[in-house]
Length: 286
Figure 1 (cartoon, rainbow, N blue to C red):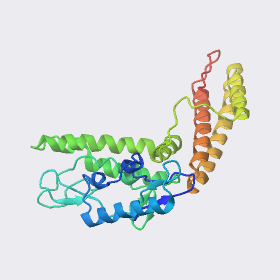
Figure 2 (figure 1 turned 30 degrees about the horizontal axis):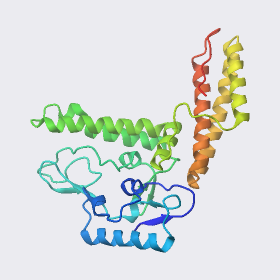
Figure 3 (figure 1 turned 90 degrees about the horizontal axis):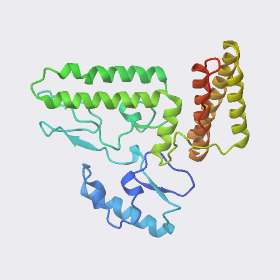
Figure 4 (figure 1 turned 180 degrees about the vertical axis):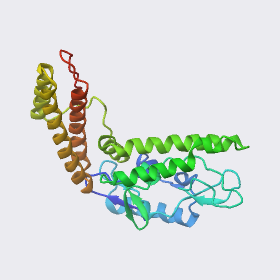
């Protein structure tokens, strides 16, 4: 059901509560809010304790990783009728109820919300390669179901509030996943790796290339010069996206972070070409 990863990579869908608390010896509190049978909880706890003993457990060496297809299906309850519903349900399943639900639990990913990713045993796993057309179709269908205007005349104001929250979350999920840079950052975030807006490049050769491009932009005298730089940045971006895909597919998250920082720089260059004006100072963050 759960397993330890002994290599140096982080796996997707880390079980956040446990991953950030390596000193616990009792795991009962980790299941608060989850509809998981007590015998399953006990089996999980005993399995972890045995694994720690057998593998010489170390905080720095082992990470507990959660896979959606490995754990029991988690349910929640309708806020109005208390019926048990799937944790990804937007509305109550009971025909005589059918009210819109509160936003998804915190451990539900944007990939699950928008139905994007690779399906393994019926469960969606994050993937960098997504069908952008299907992503947008899923987004529009979901927004139709939760649009606040459809709930503005409901007697119970709570439905309108939940619809507004659902709509906002779905929109945020779409904005993150539709863009290659924000999608890469999000996938790294799922694996406890963050990138700041001012993350520095470690590749000095690339840094010199960035500075050279900035100088070219500042010295450009016409839009044709700028267009050539923009086309070059687009090629760089596409190449990095292809490399990112390979890095994520092989779970090489450290390489993925390095590539994401590079992608962020080339995004800034592309934006600078869009904002270019003769004589205007070129701002490229590094």
